[in-house]
Amino acid sequence: MQTSPARPTLTVYFDGSCPLCRREIALYQRLPSRQTVAWVDVSQPVDCGEGLTCATAMRRFHVRDERGRLLGGAAAFSRLWRCYAGWRVLGWATAVPPMSWVAELAYRLFLPARPRVQAWVQRLTS
Image (cartoon, rainbow, N blue to C red; front, side, top):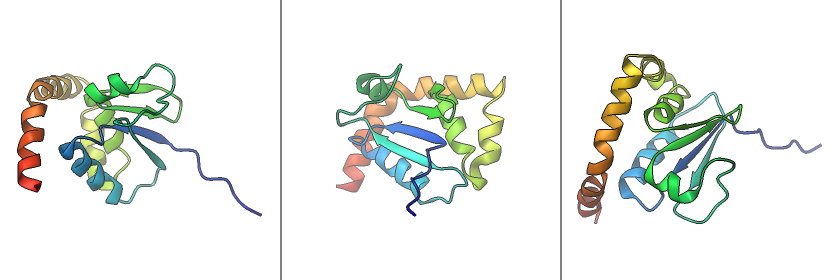
């Protein structure tokens, strides 16, 4: 009897065209997780499900949890981190105010710098 693959607990939408993003996602993919995580590269046309387009997912990190809730930005990272034993405390700490507000502010401040950081990572890895 063949079993069907486990339904993902978390679906992660990431920019596979970004060298920085690819490196970070590769780090998470190597970590052992008690949850099933699906990885979706939104740099290629894919169906992201209700409420999310590839264009939106390219601009901001998103995850979809087991209940279908879509989370973006720092909340998405916080949810992802809770999948991994070594990151769980950080995930829970950044899930509640005031730390969730600080994490989101830091994420929003990073977004405009992301293209420069991507170029820097590209030069280092080339």
